[in-house]
Length: 111
Image (cartoon, rainbow, N blue to C red; front, side):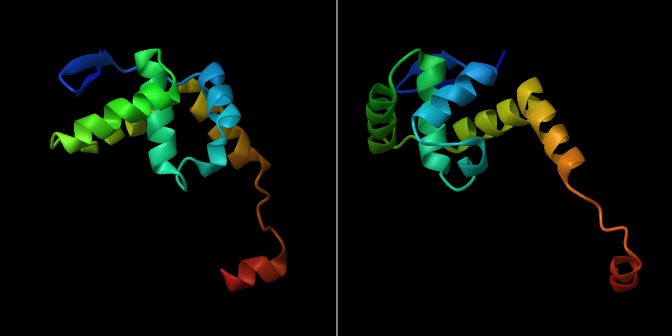
């Protein structure tokens, strides 16, 4: 079980599932935008793990940083949760299968 600490509060990291991705999208961060909006995505993930609103999570994160805390370890847990998520793995596999391969003679000559 992975855990992380914010303001001396131990929080259990949760697996990323379909419902969480829907919550991300409702908050304005789609799957494609997670890398472009890492702070928003992390705040949503922390809120999900805390069973709190994103506003509450944002306040906790702000206090944590003001007290000298970092988000480095939490980002690693979030990244691992995404990599290990069966939902993300299935979506990634589907996207790879949808990507057309260039099999034309011209495309092979350029490779």
